[in-house]
Amino acid sequence: MLRQSNRLTARSLIAAALALAAGPAAAQDMSWASDVREDGWGDGRVAAGGDMIIFRRPAPKGPEGHPRLQLRYEYRDGVAMGGKTYFTLFSLDEYDCKAGRLRNLRLGAFTGHNAEGASLQPPARTDPWKAPAAGTVDAKSLAAACGR
Image 1 (cartoon, one colour):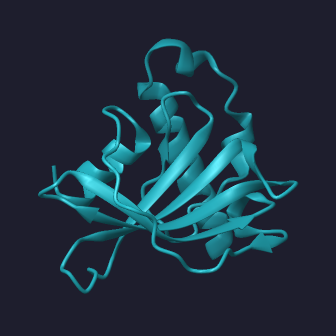
Image 2 (cartoon, rainbow, N blue to C red; image 1 turned 90 degrees about the horizontal axis):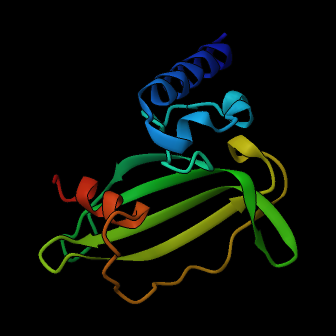
């Protein structure tokens, strides 16, 4: 019953996002997203291009006091890595609000939507800090993490 409820909630979010979308993305076929479940992640957002759904939720701050977000990306066409295509990616990112930059701390991927199928978890690493380009998913995540 809970799984069905999550599916309906995610479908409702997707339908609302599509209804509010303007321009070419509104005309795109979003049937691929109908089986993406919220699974406790909260408010999923359909990206402007209609090719992914992004879920964000706060994570505990890092040792330097920087805010962190857990991100879940559900891709329409998947992302190729190591000879396989992955449709769900998880990321733990850290944000330096004063400097306007971010870095990835951890990544995980699954061959199916909703974190199903074969998984890939590269060894933990900390990417270098980078400033995101304006208007990108990373810039929007920085704004969300920093309360802007």
